[in-house]
Amino acid sequence: MSGITLESIIEEGITSGKRRTRLAVALVYFSMGLAFASWASRIPDIKTSLHLSDGAFGSILFALPVGQFLMMPFSGKLVTRFGSHNVLKVGLPLYTLALTGIGLVQAGWQLAVVLFLFGLTGNMCNISVNTQGVAAERLYGRPIMASFHGGWSLAGFTGALIGLLMINLKVQPMWHFITIIFIVWVIVRINYPYLVRVDADPQKHEPRRKFFMKPDGVLLQLGIIGFFSMASEGAMFDWSGVYFKDVVKAPESLVILGYTSFMIMMATGRFLADYLISKIGRKRLMQICGVMISTGLFTSVIFPYLVPSTLAFMLVGLGVSSIVPTVYSTAGKHEKIPPGIALATVSSVSFLGFLMGPPLIGFIAEAFGLRYSYAVIGIFGIGITLMVAKVKALQQE
Picture 1 (cartoon, rainbow, N blue to C red):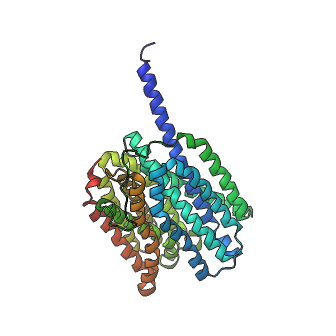
Picture 2 (tube, rainbow, N blue to C red; picture 1 turned 30 degrees about the horizontal axis):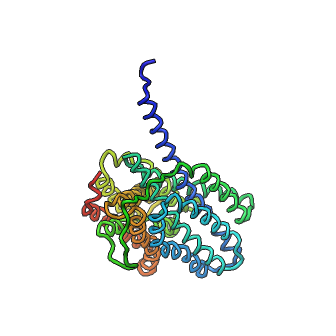
Picture 3 (tube, rainbow, N blue to C red; picture 1 turned 60 degrees about the vertical axis):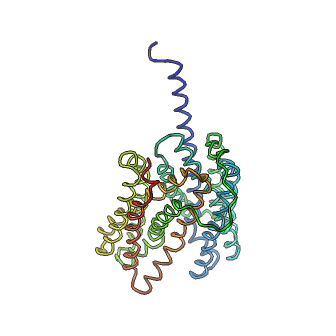
């Protein structure tokens, strides 16, 4: 039988192994996104059951990003020392247990404590899974990182649908979260053997560092780009519904249209990004994305009507879709710093966008109106386009 050789059989086996590894990593991304989306879907129920005011609940919610931010420097060191697959083996069960803890709280202070732990374990998993993404991309030898983040976005839709079902069935948050734990643990148990084991490089030991020191210049630049993107994302996540209600004056049934259109296009863009990077390169794609973010936000400000604003929010979704995955992928390829440390550094700067973006919108909206606060965030897209041109690492394909 012609055409079948030992070499071709070996090559087919290697290719199948790569595909299985990619699927395993993608499903871990999905698992984490599902857990987070499940918590988000039950926020109104939990707030009501604890009888919390808007102000008190807002203060309690801040415990989650605080936990994430405080864990960032330690997550990178854990991943570098023990390997991302080993950290995930411990971190993901703890993450889901913290999720269950949210369903068990009986008082506001208990929710704050559990959310803090949810943030700590979530960041540990976040750095680990993105390190896995970098390692899988290196194994493939071509861009695939954005598709992993697409899996995360897809999990957001899935988690929201499951949450809607649980709410309609009047299932308590605790039992809802226990169901999610079962799903996540099954996914991780099946896929853990196929995760990448070679992401910890024994020849790339990081020198002993001071706790506070000047970060690497390239990583700082990548972090700033991520900051601009995450601030834009935060504006859409937290304020798009309010924008459509108060500025666009959308009917009550269509208030969610802006957020939904943004999320759909962000997920779509992430599944297309790897292909586009292979065609036009990281630098050009990110510059185009920066222009789309600014164009979309400025359009929604200039034309605050239902159809133009919906199209504008779709454009913003496409714009932010590729920025963070590309920034993480580039950081993970740093020649002198282990992927876990590099990702933690970039995440630390980028994540400030999530912390500072939504409050910045609130302050500007209080002083000048929500419409003009979106115009200010629109400037961040221009900042991305300008910053990308200065980062040499983005020109290396």
